[in-house]
Length: 356
Image (spheres, rainbow, N blue to C red):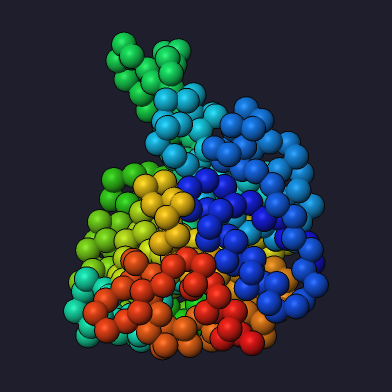
C-alpha cells in the first residue's frame, strides 16, 4: 500500500506530520513517500505541481494532502499559483467525487455557534462534483496578464458547463451513499436562473428512478445555505456541483464548531483517492504549533476505509479521536473553559496513545 504524502504550504506540514505519525502507529507496513506541492514546489521547481510530484501521485494507491496557498503568491500568473496544484491533481487523477462529512461530535456541541438542539447529533454528507462547472470553464474577455492581474480590461467571464456523464456518475455516487445512510438525497442547484443547473436537475431526477428506495428532493442553493443554519439536521446526503459544493461544505463545516475537525476524500472510478482536511493552509498561524490536526488524521482514516480496504483500522482512528475529545483535550480552535489546551503535536501524540 503506497501513499504519496504531499504536505504543501502553511500549516500543511504540521498537520500532515501528525497524520503520518498516527498511520505509522497502526503498524500496517504502509509505504509513504513525500514530495513538494503548491507554493513550496513553486519555490523549488518553478511550478506548483512538478512532474515528479504528479508521477508519485499517479503511482500511489492514495494521496495524503495537507494544504496549499499563501498570500505572497497572489500576484503570480494564475497557472502558477499554489491552488492550481490541487486542480491539477484532481484532473490528472480523474478525481470526480468529493466526500465531505459534517459531523458534530457530542463533546463539541458547545463549540458550535448554533444552539445545541440544532446541531446535536448532526451527521451530513456533502458530495461535491469535482471535474466540471465554472472552475474548469474557459476564461474569456481578458487582456494579457500583468503580475497575475488584468489592468485595462473591460470584462472577464468564465463558462459554466456540465456534461450528462459527469452528472450521472456523481448522482449514482450520491444515491449509493444514501442507501448506506438514511436513504435521503437533496440535490442542490440554481435551476431557476442557470440553464446548466436545470440540466443538472433533469439528469439527477432521471438517475433517481434507478433508486426507488431513496427519497430525492431538490433545493435552490440560496435556500440550502439558509436551511443549513436554520435546520441542518433535515439533510442527510447533499449532492451538488463544484462551486456550490465548495461553498456549502465550508458552511456545513462551521456548524460543527470548527473547520479544523472535518476531513474530506476525493475519489476516482477506481477508488484511488486524495485525502485532505477541509480547511486551508492558514499561513497566519503556520509554525506556531496551534493548528488542529484532527481533520487530517480523520482524512487518513477515510483513506484507509475508501482506498486501502482497511475499514477496521479506520474505525480505530475515529474511535481514538473521540476518546481524545472525551478526555477534554483541545487545540486553540475548539478550546473552551473547562478543557485542556494542547499543541498540534500534543494532539497527535494523544491520538497515538489512544490507539495503543
